[in-house]
Length: 418
Image (cartoon, rainbow, N blue to C red):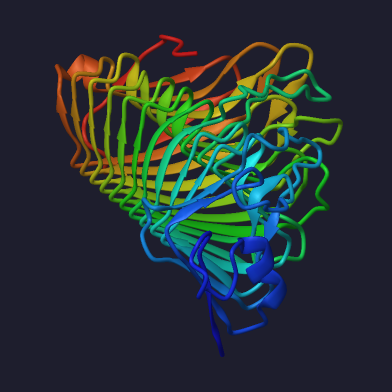
């Protein structure tokens, strides 16, 4: 194991550019980055700066060690490319103590099958995603600061014509045959075009993709869409997705604090028999129209299941609902059938949202049949009159909300919340 010292001007350094240092480094080496600006303009870097397998990159000062992409690259889609990044990691690599700014594409890219660590970095002002993870075995992102990503406001077209939006702080794709584990802890994220953290499975993947997300103690503010977005399938069938999102602060995100979308088709394939198991616990959510929004299915999709526990969250200042649960959301000219959302909603504190907690079997356009929400309400504290606190509605005909017999008091209504 060697330590390779990099400094732009120090004659005693082993290398004067990161490009040079990476040609020297081999597995188990440490590239120690000295203060300075490393960019194509300043130090003649060749982008993407690909960290060799097994190498650790460590900056001596997060604020002073700046890797600047000089605006190179563009957003990419179908496929999204990890090499369109200022820094591209490899398997068993780590990046810490540096600032990565000003990429036209992503800040940091993580390719298929890699296990990586990104910690104590600043990642900001990128045209596309701050960190893009493509089918990693495991990506661990901790203690980082993210600001103003998605500057190119990229909205790619989709086969079914549904609107898309790229420009997340952390965007992860699950890929077939990979570990697909994302762990994000203790990060601070402010201002992006899409969502703070999103982890999804796109439509080109084969069936039976498994993935998991652990999202703890992050602060996510002022995203133009949501704080957290999880989706089990945009096309494949029989995917399995496990989610733990706990003790996060989600504040002032423009559409929702946290969202689980079990299945929605974005291309020709019809997703079916997908399953999500999720726990959303101890989060502080404020200042979004919807606090927590969970959907069993949207559009042409069938026989999907979502099992979610929503526990001990503090939700305030939501202009629509603090918690909204929907079994199926229909879209014109297609059918949405036999999807089920199982939910336990317990010990949440809700203030300033009316109606506060709502559950609906199905709604929207198109044809919806036998979509269900099965819910248990336990010990929630809602600062609202009973008729506005917990509401359930079957929605369109042949859809149902079933409330457990031991639930706290609720009101059944004909009101359509969609």
